[in-house]
Image (cartoon, rainbow, N blue to C red; front, top):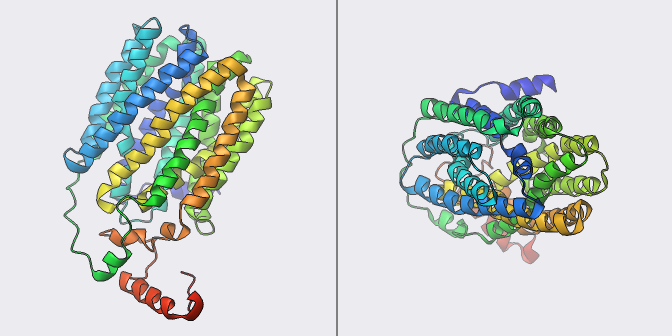
Length: 439
């Protein structure tokens, strides 16, 4: 296992500066995101108010992220948008030091969400640079974010436990600025791809719909899963604090999750030999169900925090699968828009529902009911993903047909071969498949 992880962590020239970019953004976010609900709680907001503020920030980030994704696909460089976002986030987060009261805190939180929204472009940047490599390489790069997050969460949690949460803006600002400087230095804007060549008759026959129904169904699944995650993750922080934990334990819980994300992402390329991305996403949803049920009955902060070890496995499975599934189902020339749409649903629209609904349920009925409801929603999300996403699309048999440069881990059979195979299959009586072709 150790040798495989060392291999996964080795830099690859084709990945360019992506490795450290993911490490740095993980380290920066770990000093802010796990502690933001607790910061608002300590500033006097109750659970429904925290939910409303976080929901408003998610709504603003949703529209801002979609706008930036459209610009990245058509007008501006995604790399430069990320650099600008890092500067904006570093400036806005410092306003927390001056903000007091519900309205002021809400305005700063929403502004920070808008400033950070271009960070979602990191995934399409990575996928675009890895298009000539196996897509499992994405998971190996993404795990570096988890590594940066794990180390930073523990250290910052200990610091906030000793010195107070008022240090959050002054720790996050230089770290996110450092991330922006690295992206500016190491990830130079790339030349836009040329228009796709004229399609062959086989490609026209097999081309997927411009907005595939499977993608719409998967986004519904992502919506439900994201709502469940937002409810549990935001108010687990409050629950750990109420049960007697502090910033150190909250930071450790965030690190626990990252520690199990790393080996899971490192082994994703092995899991995909036996399971489709759709199946991995469903398995991750099942793990969320079990852990949410356990959180509903946890009575001490240490147990609640330790359960984040299991959540790391679920997050790695669902997040990586969601990125790859979305990449499969999106037109090749709209990769950034496809990824932004998925992230806007999973991390933008879903948190609006999850944070607002979770806060209301937590405040009215208590944490147990909230966690039980989150478990039910995660279960439904996994079921919808299994039904909505066709297995063959994840093998690249159809969706890969409109790509200018198919990824090498997809099927090596040519489009014409697929077309002739399907024609011969159609001629067999009763729809019988030719021997040796599993299609």
